[in-house]
Image (cartoon, rainbow, N blue to C red; front, side, top):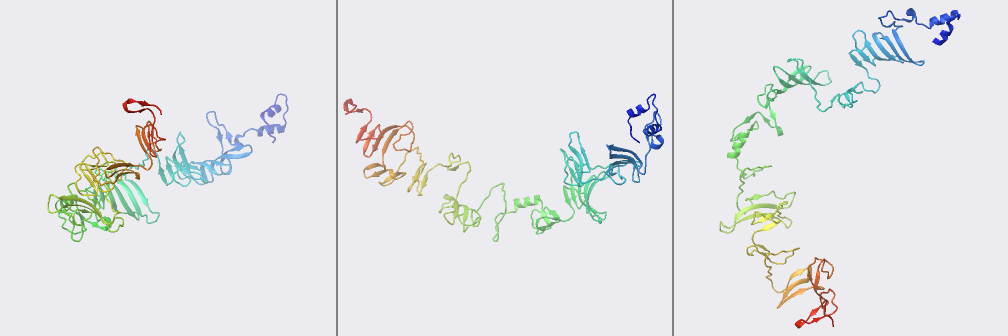
Length: 504
């Protein structure tokens, strides 16, 4: 039949026209027939009735032009229900009419209220919130994510306060997490909480589905932990051997303060150790072995023996870091025959590379003072190079002294025979004493400046400095740094009786 639209049909059947038999046949074929087409409207208050067609009981096909896209039918194979399939006939949505189970992309009858079969390399199920953040996901690998779109484990929970809660419906419904091997023996552990009347958490082992015992117990109310017992009476109760470091098996605790036993089956309590330490322990060592401890804290006084022998005082470990015969000590002993003469000795031995250093950090060191104001403050005399008394608050130096800067608030004395006693830079610059003569030595010039600051340039009085007098190449200059005669005065020369000479 040649298809005609409504406009063409109206022209054939208008008033005065004479439609042919074929025209009537075409008109009849262009309408729906309840019996042949299976579509009818039974009554005013009833919906459209569509009778399924064919083996798959098809109800409706959808097309894009001449291309079939989707189909709706009442069966998927031999499964009764509502089925939506694509152009290839693959079921994409199926609702089982017998139990209401829904299948997505499955090729068999759904066995759950929602049964999803993955296709290709796509995730199985994803639920996003209104902000498009994923709140639930089953990815292509079967991993489940709650609050994450990329779970790396079979179950991953992510959130501001990620909490996994397992509840029982009643007092006797135990909340349990089972950890099992993938073997027929069904070996593994249960993490189990049993409520009223136990109110305890257990770690229980299983083999062949039979409990092998509750190995660890935590009591809800007290927080007591039991290992090998389900009724712990202490914060930790162990029913069995407790294997400590180096394999010591402890079966009991001892309160014996004498520690007279010699067994590895008991360990002393805090009270026993304190009693022994307060009344028995002497850190004297023994003839064969000295007392040794990694760390020692003393809340009282340490009293090492007095004397100047190698077994007295405090002796540090010899040869630190693989040294050679190096040693260090602190000793306190009497000098001579009088008990009033004593010495506190801090010493090192072996060679000139062994030193004693006081390292106060940002603080100072004081000798004769408890409030040093310099890196080294000495309240008393100091003799360098000898052992006689320099006198209180005096410095006595035997030999040569080199210093960058020396400040003296009192007098500075040189108890030395005639010689150049002060060298400045080298022997070519200095101050000395000859028989009946004090001299000043220079390698070039003499100059006297008033004010100013130091300047390294020759005969430069420095900023704001004024030249008073210069001796240069046997010429004397007053007010000038470059005298051209035996005596050159820059300015007026006032002679006897006040005569002012301006020039000769």
